[in-house]
Amino acid sequence: MQSFDAHLLHHLIAISADRHADSTALTHGDVSLDFAHLHRQVSGFAAGLMGLPIHRGERVGIYLEKRCETVVASFGATAAGAVFVPMNPLLKGEQLGFIIQDCGVRVLVTSAERFRQVKDVLASCPSLRAVVLTDGAEQEIDQTWPLLDWAQFVAAPPCATHRVIDTDIAAILYTSGSTGRPKGVVLSHRNMVAGAKSVASYLDNCPTDTLLAALPLSFDAGFSQLTTAFHVGAKVVLLNYLLPRDVLKAMVKHRVTGLTAVPPLYIQLTQLDWPPEIDQNLRYFANTGGRMPRETLNLLRQRAPSAKPFLMYGLTEAFRSTYLPPDEVDRRPDSIGKAIPNAEILVLREDGTECGPDEPGELVHRGALVGQGYWNDAEKTAERYKLLPAGVGGRESGLQLPEYAVFSGDTVRKDAEGFLYFIGRRDEMMKTSGYRVSPTEVEEVLYATRLLGECAAFGVDHATLGQAIQVIATPPAGADAVDVPALLAACKQCMPAYMVPHGVQVVSGPLSRNPNGKIDRKLLSTQWAQQQTG
Image (cartoon, rainbow, N blue to C red):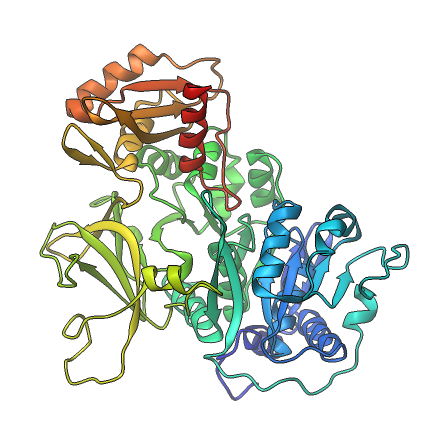
């Protein structure tokens, strides 16, 4: 057995290969890898990189759907001492080219089909030195870069790799930017390993778990399904689904015990009938990427009454921040809980002092999960990663070296018992009739009516109100329209007058999403404004 604990990302696989060599680590379609085989492929990929050669800290871009090669390349890059950059498979050529140029990707791992689609864009990426193709390398002809065959690449004999410590960079995760260019969040080995250990501890993950990876692996919560599972020797099922029903089918087929998803997917799943086998196996479900509407939570608990609900809050800049224990859900279903293990969450005023009970303030995250800023973007890094004031949290005034924390930009409040409640993002808060209103507050009420399928609320300029509340909604499952008068009547019964939507636009679903699967409120508001001026 390994005599050391995991402190580098690829150690999660190496140690599980030693402890659970014959246990299935990864399944994709009809292909499964046990931990011993996965570890050999990771080591082979690392050796292949060293043979190019690749230098310490250089970036390896991965442009693939969820498949075994995606996982091997991610962990293999860090095993070589390089940095992996996962790129959402939904991205198009221009977006891909921006990321490759922004962080200077040296090696790109992709498929032959994807390579052909983005070949012209790659020609404008001077940093790129080699392309590894998971298939069809022998048919591709290109004089610009060496095109390397995956099978031969991972068959490289073991060799020495670069020395790396836990504060070195492991990954750059690009956040989806609905306005402007995406930002590359820099995460160290320590960030990712500490996150895996923390999340696995409160989810009680164990070797008998099977986690469904339904979220993109370029999304921090999606990649977390790998790290938490590998930390304890559990199995991960990779799923590229087309329809929400595919998720339910996979849960039945693979006897999934843990599911983490974003609220929009859960909303769609609750509109379907769940086979009874799901509840027989599902141990927990967890949310990320926004607050879970209470109505959706109630429906999920009806569909899988044996599963424990974990309501979580996180941001890519600090991976995961809070969770609400399942035994608190009935008492405070609107709470995002308290800090996860090995993190501290503060609620601060603009002057840096701590807020009192139930006083709104900015959520600030400190601890081992705080990332290393945005790649190549000092200005945006300074906006989000700031020095923690002396005397706040564990910072005593006698400490001389500074500590950076993540200032989330999200407004929350903390009750007298220390439980946190999400209010809204500062850049999305609506100011109407002199009141500040969170879009999620409005959406929560709209979902509770059950008169619509999906919805997004946002503020639009108004001559007398300052901003009026506009809603875009889809019909409920099985219906062709939304009864807007009935919806507004229900809102008037449940909301103060200033929160009642000024307008409701009904569209066929589903609503636009960003690459991480979240409903893209900013894009929808921009499209709505363009329609008004067009």
